[in-house]
Image 1 (cartoon, rainbow, N blue to C red):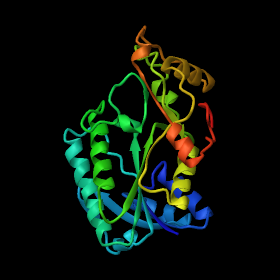
Image 2: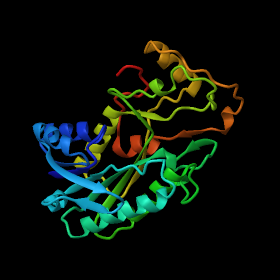
Image 3: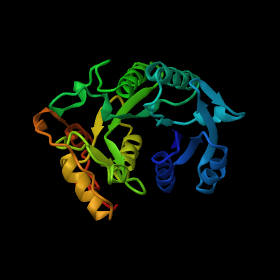
Length: 274
């Protein structure tokens, strides 16, 4: 199978290498010239592709879209004032590029930030257009809508929780800092290895037209998890303000993913150093 990965970064690069090991032909995009050779060394067919916000490409990049499957991994970011409009233009450029290509299946990497600040357990149907907790979530919801309503290809949406694994651990960003809020809020995270395994299964089994939450089973509180993680990593633990609002926080459900894919998590509980 020929697979194009739009965004060979922290997740897309190891995903590409994993798919190659499984016998697939992989094309990967980057926005950096210096990464072209790195992709080539790993057997990935490299392409320089940018969205600013419209598609900007170099010569020969049209071949990037000549694949069976597109894995779309371009997060909207959080620092733009016009983030929804900007990301909408990026996604529209992708749809236009696909329109004349053989791609018939898109896996879109979204986020659990699409959910409003609802208390309790949230499932895939609880996302409400325009009601996400932050603008980046609303941008992703708009992108999901555009892709799932396109006529010339099928889309499956993966809403990942916070990503960790490899050299990335969220405890490193909070270590030693003081005055954090939401001490009792449950964490909704997922290990990179599980992300790669889930995407691979979707692609190889051609599971189209679905939306899945993808978070690990374990949901300790922020205070419990980040304090323990910092200690085990030899870092200064963060401190949290008193918090009595534990009943007002959301937990993201992964039940649909486990049921439909019959998926067993590689890391069902949150780990510190994997």
